[in-house]
Image (cartoon, rainbow, N blue to C red; front, side, top):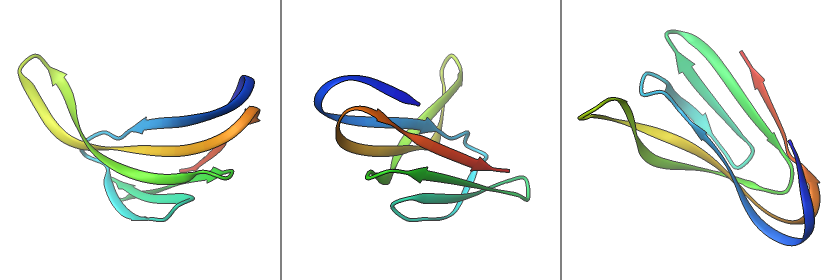
Length: 88
């Protein structure tokens, strides 16, 4: 992603995960997930930090399922390029 603008900004890239995705491991730059036995690795390149946040998924009215969001937090001067790589 190319983020345009000027000056210093705090940014968060949010990646909601489906409730059936299981967390295997994570650190400040990558996360390893499992979906039905298939491993998925998501890498974040930059000066940011990856954090997990509890959240909810709403597949239909009146139904809330617990899930997680990946938040990649970054403070930087714009413009900047945020690179995310998904290995499936």
